[in-house]
Image (cartoon, rainbow, N blue to C red; front, side, top):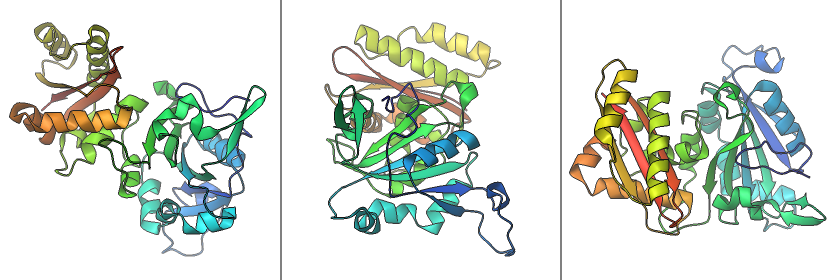
Length: 312
C-alpha cells in the first residue's frame, strides 16, 4: 500500500485516526446555516479517520496538517486528551489563524505507533524514508492539496519534528507559522520557517515570495550542493539576469552552509545562525524586503547549502 512521500500524495485508507478536524472559512462553506451572526469564522468539524480527512482535503483543495502524537496513553482517547500539541490545535485562536489563511485546512491526529503496509510488512509511518525528517518520533507534517498549479499537489511541504535535534527545538507556537507560510516545497518552507522562528524575528520572509527569486535561490542552492562549495558563484551574471526578469530591480543574495551530516531543519536553523554572524548577510535577512526567495539543498558531502535572494 503506498504511503506519503515528498513527491506523491498519501494513500487513502492508509491510517485510522481518533479524530480529524476541518477548519473552514465559514459555516456556509460546510453547508451549515448559521443563526449566530457573531459566530467565529473558524469552524471545527470532526472526522472519524485519516481516510476521510484526506478525501476532504482533496475535495476542498486544502492543506492537510497531520499531527503525529506520542502513543504513551493506554487508550487513543486518553492520548488525544493529554497531548500538548493536540490541545494547541484545539485552541480557537489557533484555528482562526489557519481559517484566515488563503486556503482551507484539514487537521488530522494520529499516534506515533500507527503502521502502514510496505510489501508484506507493517512498519511505523514515522519510520518511512519519506518522513525521516520527523526524527522517528512525533511531530507535524503538511500535505499540500491546495496548489496544483504550482506542482505541489499531494506533496509533503512541511515536516516539523517534536524530537529535539542539534539546533532545532520544537515549540507549539511554530505550528502557527505553518498557517501563513507561502506555498512552496519542503526545502523552501523549511528555510522560511527557520527564518521566522529566529528570536530576532527577521523581516525579509514577510515580504512577497517572488517565484523568480524562489527559482533562482533553488538553482543556486543546487549548484553549490553539486560542487560542494559555498559562495556567490557567477553572481554578476546571475544578478543581471534576475534584474532583467524583474524589470531592472537590483537583487541581493545571502548564502550559507551547514555543518555536515545534519537533518533538514537543523541545517536550516544552522544557516540562519550563520547569517546572524555576518553583518552584511544579517542586514539583508533581518530587513524588510519587497520580495524574497529562499531554498536549501544537500550536497554529496552531507552539507546543506542555503540561498536567500531579495529585492527592495
